[in-house]
Length: 403
Ligand code: MG
Image 1 (cartoon, protein in one colour):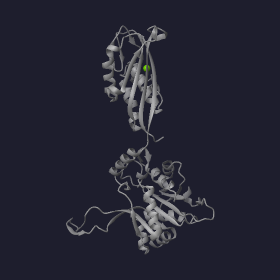
Image 2 (cartoon, helix red, strand yellow):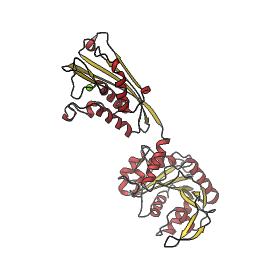
Image 3 (cartoon, protein in one colour):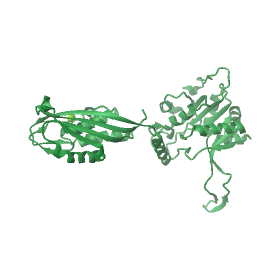
Image 4 (cartoon, helix red, strand yellow):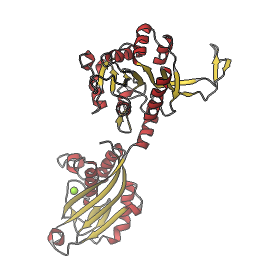
């Protein structure tokens, strides 16, 4: 992998010293946030945390190179998570400090004037936070994003009793990014080797460098526990672009012996029944195919094969529920449906209310978002001859646009 140090980054501007590189620290393997992958690979708003974080730096006009420090076992995960962004991967070390140091060493040939160090698990960093941190580093030599302490801070003895109330007016909670003159930080890391400092500002301080605080934000929080991941997912989903998609479905069933049909989940008395593997509810089959079509998820036959005995005589609302479940997994919301039944008989108008109610119960849609119509084909074709019944459905879904 590139962590072998053979894959040296190259400057786009030959001969000119690049202004700023970014080191994203993603080498942790903690699964404290829940799930089966480290938090930086978990998905928020349908997208891996690392992709969001790397994306902000890769898109920043001041950043010419992005290095991501990962655990050597996670290369495949990391490449998949980052996607198309231009990123160099470097193997991390035993501690955060060592991992950052590996990222810095990787930049040796490139020799940027400034370097930004950022935790992969802070995906809501913004262009503005990065810009202000870099600006503060230009002025003072080094800077860390952070937020002034808003809570009163108490110091306690071993038993949890307060011994001190600490004046908070000059206290900050440090975040990342943190920005440094590259050569200064590289030297500071070399002299701090073996210590267990928790951020790079502390490494710089230990080397006697001045570090300024620059404005971060409460949204620039670090995903640590499961509730952080849930909060990040809520924020990402609320901000994610959405798209409206449309799906169409069509289904036919032949009339056969029987005394009723089932249409849109409603039993309707008739001189014939409908033939089919399940309950032959052409209305719900067309609706299922419309939902699957909108999701680009195949058709009803692929999800519920005729050859599978478990669907024999099945109530077709199961098929619709399955398709709605797929939509929900894509954070989709059914906006409306429009269903047309094509047959000469039975006359459906007396059953419209019951059918609409049934569709509403099944989909959660209000009556104004459910279109239900019936038409004949003027005695033409198979429906005109009373050989069978056809249904067409159109749906629109509001989806998270993560494709
Ligand atoms: Mg069918």
